[in-house]
Image (spheres, helix red, strand yellow):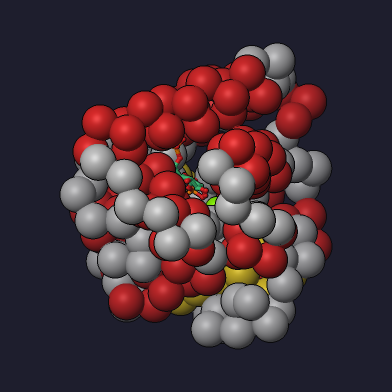
Length: 214
Ligand code: G16
Ligand code: MG
């Protein structure tokens, strides 16, 4: 019986996954490294340093620590510009009704996001206060696919992992949910997210009755 739903943020509740892609692509191109949406699938849900290292490895580049810091700052400055004007209108449709339906059934809600910008985005979307717990990059050491962030969210909710359902748009995130001993729902491409129990093209398509029987 599901007692809590733990949502990924970027790509599940709003389209920031696309802004992350744009900012990483610009950085990769500035380094002379080819980078397209397919390459980006590997980066989804992966923290900032892990993402940078995947791009550098693709270009067979190695840089010192100071340069890594500078490149991450460059990407984040670009990303912050892209999200500066976000508002409640950027919340994916279907999210509010889903939250309401889950709350009516006494189900707790949490966020598990690898992003250091999660609080800012949640506030912009007007949903910061909707959650019983928020686990973000500031709280955990290990990046998805490690289960740590989902386990932290469950611990903060006081719900056993087996009674949690996680919703993710990233292959690394689905692996993290499975490793945490939770049920995984994917949002996006069924091939990319084949480790999930069920995959829906977007959050609006998600069928709550089915979810709650899992
Ligand atoms: C997100 C994105 C990733 C991004 C990571 C770190 O995770 O999916 O693409 O690299 O956060 O973001 P930042 O640079 O803002 O700290 P999630 O878990 O919300 O999908
Ligand atoms: Mg995501």
